[in-house]
Image (cartoon, rainbow, N blue to C red):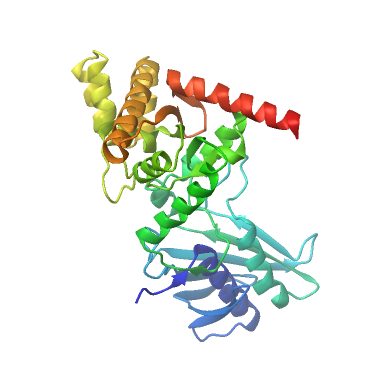
Amino acid sequence: MARTGYTLPVFAVAAAKAALLHLQTRNLETLQSVAIDLMPGEATIPIEQVAQLEVDSALAIAISDPGDNLDLTRNTPIWAWVKLQQRNSEPLILEGGEGVGKTASGESAIYSYARRLFEANLLPLIPPDRTVTVSIIIPEGRQLAQRTSNEAFGILEGLSLLGTSGISQPLSAEEHLEEFRQILQAKVQHQSDLVFCIGSNGMQVAQRLSIPETAIVQTGNWIGALLVEAALRGAESVLLLGYQGKLIKLAGGIFNTSSHLADAKLEIISAAVVRAGSSLQNVEAVLAAKTADAAYKILVELELAELVFQALANTISQKAQAFVQKYANVPLKVGTVLFDRQGKIIARDAIAVQLIEGLKLVKKINSTTN
């Protein structure tokens, strides 16, 4: 039976609570665990280490355990540095230290559930005349974030304290896919022209393009399966809207974009560079890049980015249409829009331009008639 675990905010709060309790009680014995209010529910979280640093500060460490979920934060140390001082404007101040991501506006990527979790567990422990400052540090966060699509979704320089629940409930791939299928089925009953958004930045780009929310479908990594589902359910078109480092996998015939299954981004970009007639030296420069984002920047410097990614957008749409025809045996018009890590559109094919204009028109008509 699959084992449940806890989300990253729970371990951050546990470390902070352990440091605060240690600071207040000045208990020389090592604190083994702390009880956490999960809102709802409770959990007892083991504490790896806790120590007083100065008279008014302490540091505690908890180790992330997401249960049986496939999660790269497993066994990641979460540090909480806690400082107790005279009350100023607020009883509790939260800061993101090294390894905690930042939003595009520069704020720490500590979201609403995490903040409520900190407040529920720490505020009752803070004396009326004191302020507690908590700085969360994830020493491996910056490195781990490079293995995620965080930057594509607007989270820079580290991991986020994100989630709507403290429980990390393992779901099978089939269960996740079924959830996306049900959402798609509900959408296609009222909207025959769909937009597949890959990642939260995809949603932001969709809003900038004035695409109606009724057309937007989240896909996770199951782009191929959901393209076929859309066609079988009567969709007429799908606009693929996503970060280039994810979406270009389709140009290589990879229709489940999970990096755990296949990852040939640099090879796919390199092949497009070859088709563009560029030199072997430029191909080798792309292959030597550490990420798809780095490869894109190299091509920008070489003044090849527009040509290469325009060709990739065309190839993605062609491959997607062929994939649907093969597995659903029905035609489906597919267009592609690629954007960079900041959400800036870097390429779109002719079909995408046509589909976007059609969706804008539908939105304008609906807003006029309502």
